[in-house]
Image (cartoon, rainbow, N blue to C red):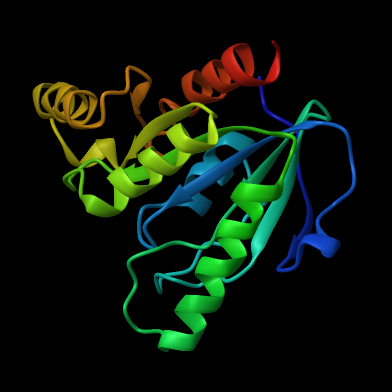
Length: 191
């Protein structure tokens, strides 16, 4: 069933966040992990801007998920072609959002399935643990691997992260996104 996902608005400052009483799920990941492609595959259409240049998302982008909850796409991390002051502004924007958004119910880490779990991902995991909200991982670009390698990658991330909610997805083949969305809804939004 196609998801009704609508772009609401972009924001930097807390005063500009959309006002509502719905649960929110934040989406984090490296600049080239495929967050926008993931959102578009989930929507079965183009609602998020996809760029061939990593690091284009510079704002918090809010999306209405079938009028039941909000997805917040955060700027990617790990892209070095930005000034130090811009990187600091991004960190402040993301930290403010994650620390102050009271209706935040979970964090989805979108990660290229071919990458290893690094200190950056561990930092996000520790942050979500400290803040007290759950985290899941969507391993994108699964179409670039064999089924055996996919299973190995999922097992490796589960072991490294200590998380059980790790999903392989492919925006190209439109596979796995619905399982991630169902997990987030059933475990984070619905309760």
